[in-house]
Image (cartoon, rainbow, N blue to C red):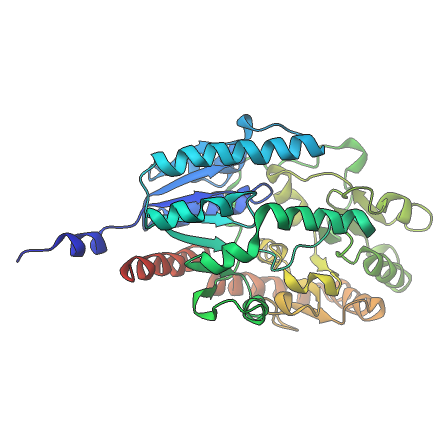
Length: 403
């Protein structure tokens, strides 16, 4: 039996050139590890440390090219512009030099839209994972609006969405929002955010390094992640005060994450009458996460309505460590939560309702533990790396067959 060249191309596993984005290196490296089971992966990453921690460095089918040392650090306007220009020059060379079939980018890469004609000319497929359908400002007021305007201008998400062959989102509600923006629904695919099980194997489970932020108790409610205007910190603190009055010393709260552009000084907010709240205002590195999560009882995601355009990786992180969650009723979040089984869902901004759920989990420890077990089961059945990467690999292959 003679097999044509076209048939051989279809049988061949496509090589994926995956491009990371700053702040997503743990996700991208771990995704590359899962995909390497199905095809060769070329990964351009911003963090060698995340590539190491996720275990991706041990996989021979991943060719890793670190970018962090080639780019300037800092948040000044000049350095941001210089970083974007250098990235453009790097990718202009690499997209011409490397052998690959599919390019898969994460979030909004600056100036990458300029490569669309090149990829079409070379007949390469483009996949795009959108974590945030609408960009959310890291600052309040005029500064936040200008940040969003600049990032959209330099990344041109409309052009990417129009010409990408496949778009990945992490929630059905996010797909609906893209369809409402007149984007072809046939190219939009919903694949859940993957687990964080690589952290369970992390040998360096260190404590929080900042000596001013050491946590004394081994059981607390935890807010984890960057502190921005849309994270609902004010709702959380108001609920925490209510819960403390009902529970007394049985209840403590830890807020762990860096705050952006002096949006709010969380430490000053809780300093006066909230000595039961511990604030860790810093970027929590991967090796510090396991200890922080294991000692917590459950996680709280009090995000406000601005977050409806995004999906959160905090939920699969909590589920990885068998912790239930209390989340606000944001559509992209509630898709991940079975109310009363893996967590609780409260009305966004309703601090009284949030406080009641906090009290419930603190007073019923066995219930909290069982919900954590159910959360881990849900993670394995719906969000495992193996399951998500199998779905993504199938999309790659179908896309190749349509050429």
